[in-house]
Amino acid sequence: MLLIEKTLPGDARQINKLESECYQSEDVFSVSRLRYLFSSECTVSFKICDENGTILGNVIGLIRRFSIPSGRIYKITVSHQIAGQGWATKLLKATEKCFAELGMKKCCAEVRVSNTPSRKLFEKNNYTEYGKLEKYYPNSETAIKFWKQLLVV
Ligand SMILES: CC(C)(COP(=O)(O)OP(=O)(O)OC[C@H]1O[C@@H](n2cnc3c(N)ncnc32)[C@H](O)[C@@H]1OP(=O)(O)O)[C@@H](O)C(=O)NCCC(=O)NCCS
Image 1 (cartoon, rainbow, N blue to C red):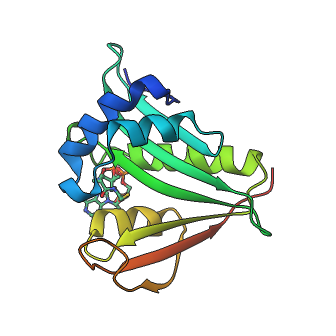
Image 2: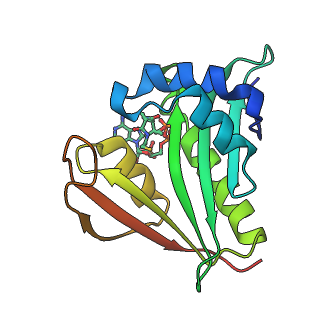
């Protein structure tokens, strides 16, 4: 059985390994960067884990207290082993709920133009495309910016 739980700083090593299996190397966060993110009060993060504690998915969200407080989906990763079963959608919904409870009004994400699964994930979850960020990534790839209004809780 798989569970969604809050991510802890001690999960950084496993999540770095998961990322190594799911991203090209330039997009993999180091263990120290992940540990820093999972320790930060500005981070909302959930993991998918099995009964042995093996991590099969993770979402990293950032809280940004701008004039209009907004959350950002920084990264969402699901292992190939459980792909296509709705787990990314569950991670996204858990993060959006937490953002709304923390007073965030909106949620955004940036996605590589070439990343069709991720673009479809956000579109399916009612995110709207709000333009492109040219040469956003280190390899000069363009990002698509998505926004969604969060429900007030
Ligand atoms: C993108 C990713 C998180 C999707 O995870 P997932 O658990 O398979 O997604 P879900 O099962 O919740 O799928 C939700 C929707 O996303 C879209 N989707 C997911 N995988 C897809 C694929 N391989 N091709 C096309 N669309 C896809 C579909 O619209 C799907 O809805 P549907 O099944 O009703 O058609 C996963 O493929 C992944 O980790 N990719 C590598 C890391 C990455 O690129 N992350 C995003 C950038 S931060």
